[in-house]
Image 1 (tube, rainbow, N blue to C red):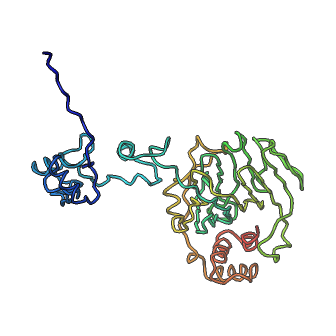
Image 2: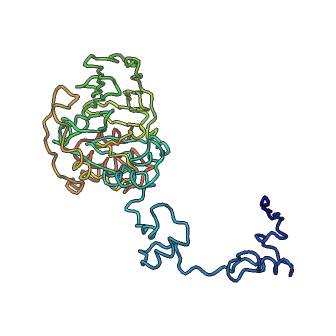
Image 3: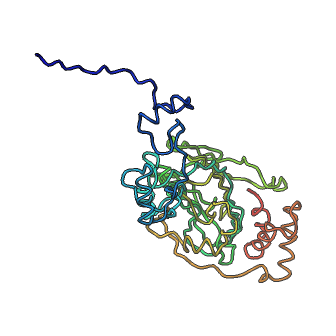
Length: 384
């Protein structure tokens, strides 16, 4: 007789024992009897959350026990299980804008995210443009610098008035027949790359000329000259005087307008010149007897300027063909003036400029020049 095998029928489970709602008593009895539930969870309640044994987000070196627990029970970044390396203080502030040292550049480029193309120091913050200012040169010679300091240079020689990478202004300081060995500004020369190799010179009336590249210009009075398309030069009697009390003086004034907002006014006298220079600071810095134009009047004394630019322009850099060797001036002061002559100088200078305080620097400089240069300086010093 053939053998018959009977396959039992499979029926659907009466309950889904993987849900987490609160089970009915019947579902609980059936699920607990017929399925494998995690210990203590039969009834549908999720296992209680236990407090972690360790804080796995710390940066100290982990103990072996902590390492084993954290690696088994938390998600650690690949290669980090065992403790995240301690954070060390930054060696440098990589958000500054000064020029970085080689060591700082190397560290910052390796350890920080720098904007593309800027690794090596962020570009300097743009500075607002500084406005032009004036430098005045007069007498034996006395100088009011761009930063409104005061300096006196009495020796002879070719001197830096303005020295920069683009603009060169030099002064020839030389004794006159009236200054008893003390120098005055005999003439000035302007050159440098901003003039594309040209040189302008202005000297006094009796023993000087106005020249462009060595050729005399503005030989008539009044007259003008086109500076090779770079600017203009005019020679006339026009110009503001410090005081209209000097309006009777015969004025011979050279007005110079050149690139880089350089404006120079030269008042020509018989044997010397007075100079007014107006310009903005040169990008990259400058120096000379007109000072370094850095906004600080405290670093433009006679001694400080001389220490920076030296006693004279080297002969190889001189804009003057006839070089004047350095000859230190006499170290004299207004106290060396005889009392009677000093009193006469004071009266003359106060008469020329009654609007100035008696103890002003301008009056003292005028008295000095009258004492040691002559009466004509009482009015010439105070007229620009």
